Every structure is written in C-alpha cells, then in structure tokens.
Length: 250
Image 1 (cartoon, helix red, strand yellow):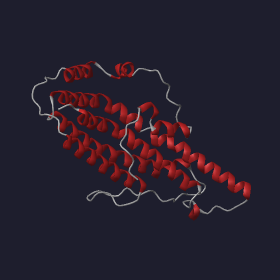
Image 2 (cartoon, rainbow, N blue to C red):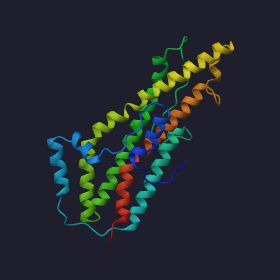
Image 3 (cartoon, rainbow, N blue to C red):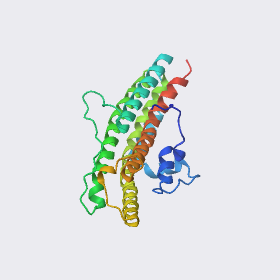
C-alpha cells in the first residue's frame, strides 16, 4: 500500500494526529517558531558546526540532472514499500534481514499489563531500529548525490548533515516515547474487554483475541497505523533533499 510521496507539515503530521485522536498526546499548539525551538536545542559546539555548514565554499559541483532525482525518488519509494510491508506483515523482508514477527498472545491470567505489553513494546522498537537504519543509509546516499551536483546543493547537504547531528538525539528520545504511549491503549483495550466479559457473564477465549473486531486485533491495527505514520515522519528529511535536487536549476 504505497502512498504518494507528498510532504506534510510536521505539526499536522499523521503521527501527531493519530496520537492525539487516541488521546495519547495533546494536540500541537501552533505559533511556536521553529528557529526559537531550535535555539533551545543547540549548544555552542553545535552552533559552530551549523555555522561551518552555512559558510561552506561554493566551488565545484556539476549541473543538476533530472535522472538522478528520478532514480532517488524510485529508491525512496522502494524503501517505503519494503518498510510498509514489514510493518503490515504482508511479505518477507529484504534478503539478509530477519523478519520482525508480530507477538502472539501468550498471557498469564489474570493478565498483568506490564508483562503482557512488553513483547509489543519490543516489537515496535525493533521496527523503529529497522526504519532508522534503512532510512539513514538512503539519506546519506542522497547527501552524497547533492554534494556532487551543484555548489548550492553541496551546501544544503552539509547543512542537513549538521542539523541531523544536532537533532538526532532529541528525535530518538521523542520517538522512543511512542511505544510507551501505546501501552495506555493496550491497557485500555484489556480493561474494556474484561469489563465486557463481566457484564455479559462470558468466559474469556484467548484464541479469539486476534479475530477481526476483537480487542487485541484492534490494538494491533492501531499499533500498525502509528508505525506507518512514524515512517512518514522519518522519511520527510530525505524526501526534502530529493525535492531540492528535483527543483535545482540547471
């Protein structure tokens, strides 16, 4: 289910909207300037690195070529499809990679939320590591292409590398909180399920939990949706670089 590669403004990204809709995150408040926020995250050494990137010499480079941008678009689309298929469990991952298997329910009764959710936290974190590794490789390739294309794009590649170094730790910390937020949804579904059993005087049947409409199937659907939305966010910087290459004047 490959989607279009159009960009989305981060405060209105699908990831933010989904987490807000699930009542796991307050909606982002508009009005805070990006430069002001960035200034709070950048220390003295980071500022030097950014300044160096902005003052990179403009000599060298070759005229932009549309075929290069097209090839990179195709590579990004292929990577997105591969990661989407991995998340959706629709096919095997690339050769040489171990498939990330979705956990199967194997809970002790009475169900303890922390222990029951842990396999799903590890599952989500494994997908995050896969996305980070694969997307970083492509982003580095795109930077190298930009650096060989024109002086302006060489400077942009240097700036992207410097910004990435500044923001990578903060990004990692923020995204690592997502599987912890999803634990609240997992607990919510368990409580509703257990209350329904009490209200209807039914026995629990774990073998039905993953059937369409059952509580665990619904949770796994939400987990998949959040992972796909996070994939979109992670691809944005690389997509922006490719768009810059596409729009470069010869």
